[in-house]
Structures are given as structure tokens and as C-alpha cells.
Figure: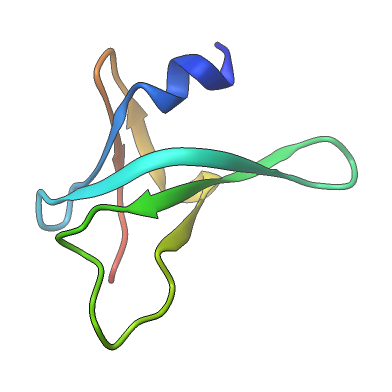
Length: 76
């Protein structure tokens, strides 16, 4: 699977069913292992009290990669 394939999928939090956002980058360790996905938060999740408009979803937080969505387990 290519990064471009992942970027077309929606990221959905299975704890509350909300769309988190879209993948804008990946985090790769010095050893070359993928550690997580950098996700641009959807406008719904961006708070006026938060200046971070992106979050990192760690690889172990990914529950399922489907055809159209990536299901993750996050506590935001």
C-alpha cells in the first residue's frame, strides 16, 4: 500500500464515531519503521483553545484499515 492510497481514506475514531481528519504525513523511525500517521484535524475537532491543527495517530492505535476508512482508537 502506498501513502497516496492511505491519504484518500478518512480517519474515524471508533470510540465516538467522529471523523478525525485526513492523513497529511507519516512518522518514520530512524530504523525505517512506520511509527504513526500525522493527521490534519477536521474543522469539527479544531478548538479555538488549541493551536495544534494536526495530531499523530500511533501505529498501535490503528484498529482496522478498510477500503474507505481507517478506524482508530483515540481519547481526545
